[in-house]
Image 1: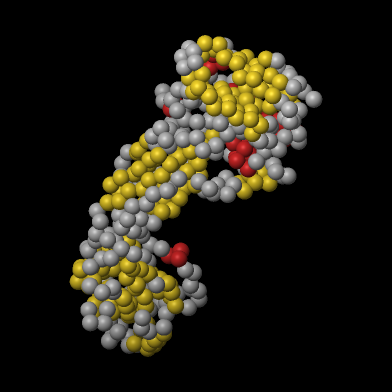
Image 2: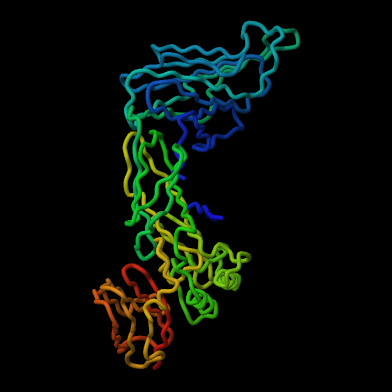
Length: 445
């Protein structure tokens, strides 16, 4: 059975229906308050705006007046209530929207009103310019009527309410836009076949061999949030005992890791580098499907987002797994992500479909001598003319040497001089036509 891991690293776009934005301000509810929600309207039509009242006490009748500040060329053609018992009037000459409840002329058998959601439907026509918003606010003093025991209006209170203004953001009339970007690992190697989703359209798009993607034909909205996840079965692991050894040595003290490496070392996603991460990666490398944390799975975050870590306390903070993108009437590019696999401390995991677990056997790969003092060589056999890339790193991730050559079919040897290399364990990374093998070698004093 194909096992798919979804790691928030879905293009979640703002709804075209009335999406309340009550969190945009925090009025004091100790006074009578009117809070008006916001909405997004791409083209002329009807949109629902939430209107909520707070701290009005027990009333028998009330009236509030809202004002809509319209852009040139736009007009409101209808205003309706979605809640029974309310009366709504709109004066196009002033832009005032009056919402009332009850009969202020007499009490009768009117029920008490405390607070309620008075959703209103507003229909726009005319021009809609991208980036233009219709401001809606409580613009006149509101009036509350209360009945006395004799059945007559006994108390009338008029006050300027506190609260939150809302807005209806207008689009450009464009039916669709696109969002594009690229997905790469921490060493800037493209991550191929990452599935990029969005919430307005079904399905997904795959990143190509360059790690690029384009989400096309997206309905225009006010805001977009991009999340990415990658199918585990579509890529080689890129994890080995070297990653585990680096975590062990980091915990014990001889090795330091940068923040990206610490993110890879946080196998169980706890935010701390501990022996549990060593156990999780060990279980994963041994083929166990239990107690292995998230080893082998990808986490994605916005490119260039600064990873926060504390090497002294072995802690690292997970970056956000999505980006918020404004697409009000125009396409957006450069929505890029970085991917790091849980357990990938050497940061060399990629996502092409080729397998490389048996590359050393296929190439008859050897490091001779190993350990070595002043020099060593990487020896291997090629079945065809190939593009070769070789890098050597110390355990801090510092690159010691790099080679890029084209070699013919047959036995090959790359000689390495270790004149100023540090003593201890080193990491070599050999790629043959894009297929990678990582191994260890020991440099002696």
